[in-house]
Image (cartoon, rainbow, N blue to C red; front, side, top):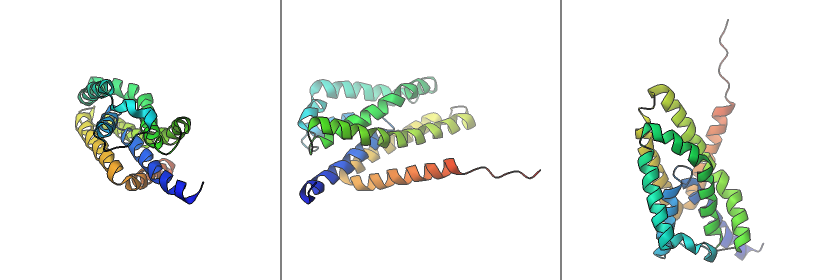
Length: 194
């Protein structure tokens, strides 16, 4: 890969990872926003992924976003949505990543790379969210989950906006989140003296 190709590819890769990360908390909101920005000509998606800006896609993404955002505030529904969202969020992340990588590569390469970077990039925030929700449910009986849901909405939206404006920053924050999570998982509880 020559320098010119690399300078074109790296920003697209950072954007792909950052957009996928925003899908780790909300699957449909980033798809709706990406499709809307593409429709306005503010986000370049590969030609194969132009359907994301179609009327049909925007309506479907809009309805799904409303259902996801509203349903996540209802304690009995939020768990079901999270179960459905576990495979859906990585798929949305892969689609978002592939769509922006489609501007610098052929469609097959965009899909393969989009999956390779989009799935793990969306799983990091999704795993952090799931862990936080588990703790919240255990400590508050689920009463704090609607508040956390509003925070997750905001973080997903802010992550999307930062992905568009400063994708490298989102990549750094994602890597930092992954590092902290690994450190916490590796930390062993202190032994209690007998």
